[in-house]
Image (cartoon, rainbow, N blue to C red; front, side, top):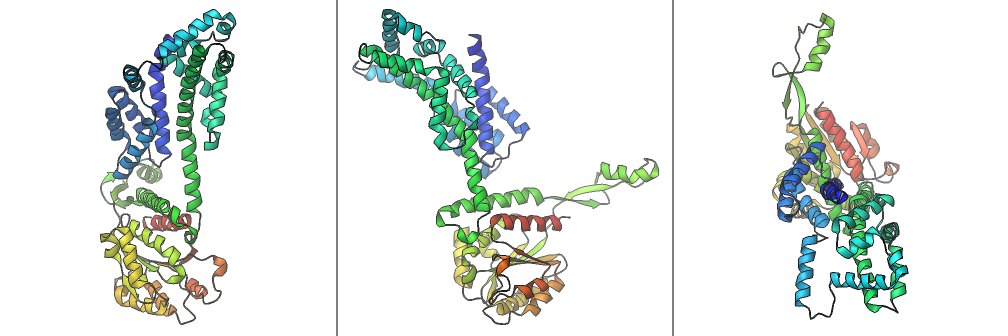
Length: 476
């Protein structure tokens, strides 16, 4: 009885901690402090009222619209699959009342099995275990303790693949001693049909408990790893090779990337003449004066608004990349409000308001329709010079996304050199492999001479690395 009481206190907490781990596997940042708040909330509201528990945990663990959506889906998946014992009992009672008496109840099955055990001493000896008694009496706490003990014995948390599900179910059943029930079923099948049905019912009940435990372990320990593996593969895959089936997933990865960059670079420190005392810097300065702080150092949180101009090639040669690059530009508006976006193939135009005002799919379609076509860098640079050259200054960063292939015509690299002379830095991101630079009609050798940075950028991981470095430089 003491074990049951301890289980009733500890098991919900263990399951809540597993759910928090499940949430972390879905890119929700949950700190130890958040976990403690969630445990306190669960202790206050209890686990009986599912809606109250969901609302309470949601208020503790989900902090944004995106996280609320992920939390709701994860809660339904984790807590919604198995019904509560109370609901099962109510449904069982209702079914028993509505039935015609053809199907015996659990108590009747237990009585039938007890009678068979009394008649066959050898059978009673084989089935004399605490687990069988718990199954016969419906002692849910004792059954749960036995299942959890078996889960620890077989290390069910090591499950990594869905195909291992049956293997772990079998291992746990063996650890629970289900072999005795199996042997009893074989022995009773031809001699005691009623007792055979009772044993089969107990086996099914035990199997359902074990299956639920393995499924829960898979959700927590394996499904998250599988999702992470797929995300990692997509992040390192060339954007031009991503098929239609995975584009929605890649869009979510882009959104996650922008959120991470926003959290990392959204607010920077700048030294000022007054404000909050910077204690470490003040103490370092005071070392030269025997610890007397003659020169206090101050700090203050300010939000920098760097000016970034981005030119995106949407011509046919980079069409497969252009959609994702435009999607990235759409997401970048939240991190860098002063970003101005331009699209071009031959003629160039500003698309900042289009990307900001319209849903992303509609915005990308309109940009491609208006500016797609054959590449002409000379005309694009001329249009950019007339539209934005006067706005470029020493705090401006210009980023160009394109393959630098100009159909063997003059790309007007002199205009590119003029842009570089006016801006803080000029970055060129090319979706082609560096091995292809300078081959055919590629103008990359000349581009490299007129840029501060020229980098291969064909994957989401490469794009994130470049933008992360850029934002770090802007905030330094």
